[in-house]
Amino acid sequence: MSKDMTLLVMAAGMGSRFGGLKQIEPVGPHGEVILEFSVYDALEAGFNKAVFVIKKAIEKDFREVIGKRIEKMIDVEYAFQELDDIPAPFTVPADRVKPWGTGQAVLSAKKFINNPFAVINADDFYGKGGYKELKKHFDESNEMCMVGYKLHNTLSKNGTVARGICEIENGYLTSVTEHTSIPFDNEFPKDTIVSMNMFGFVPKLFDELESGLVKFLEEEGKELKSEYLLPRVVDKMIKEDGERVKVLYTDDKWYGVTYKEDKQGVVDAIGALCKQGLYDKFN
Image (cartoon, rainbow, N blue to C red; front, side, top):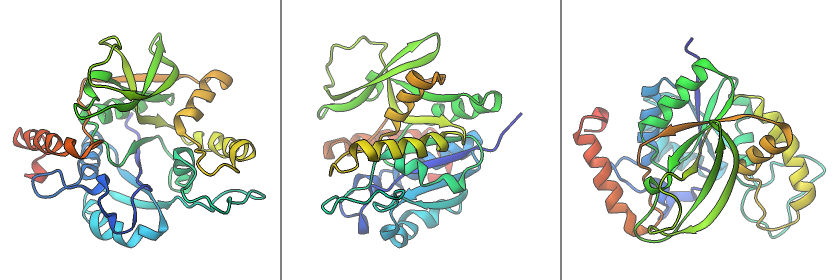
């Protein structure tokens, strides 16, 4: 049975006017950004709504630069991740500038989501396969899941990358260990699977995020750069709550502009996909 599915896009890292930010670097044949291809792929796979998590301060610019084009493709809602959006009695440290991480970002979209949903980063090109696997999975199950990528499909020739190295048993995730500096030539086994922050959830996740945020603020809320991270929440649910997270697989290559030198390779790769007819809308 086909279910409604929502795409939650974490885009609060964008700044006002998007000055020099990789999330809005044009990569398509007509100046499209990566996010437009992500929404197209999700829509093609059977998703029927997108929720963008942004900062209130950039809402006008985001709608003008990106939102108005995507709103023609799919139903869109806007959620806002704000530094001061934390439960009482907690307060924001005087010198803290950035919001509280990806866990808070997802929680901010709670009121817009009542069905299975996928979480992605705004500036990552994931390919079509992950979205198809997510939709297929939730048409048959309500288990949490993660799309795993082969490490060699996610590297940059221009410098090191940070990746979550996955441990998997019998098709289920058992842990994710963050490695912050993986070079193109590395010693990991060829079949190593990594997390690229492409998860699938059901709405019960929000209860876990709410309770977890309180604990996080109790323990780390006074630190200026502490982050309530989604992978850490998932890891806790696996190890402490016995949650099962199914690992889905794709052979697609990930593309992103980790370094400024990466951009031309991304432009060339997406241009080639468009010429193959995989993105007729953007030809």
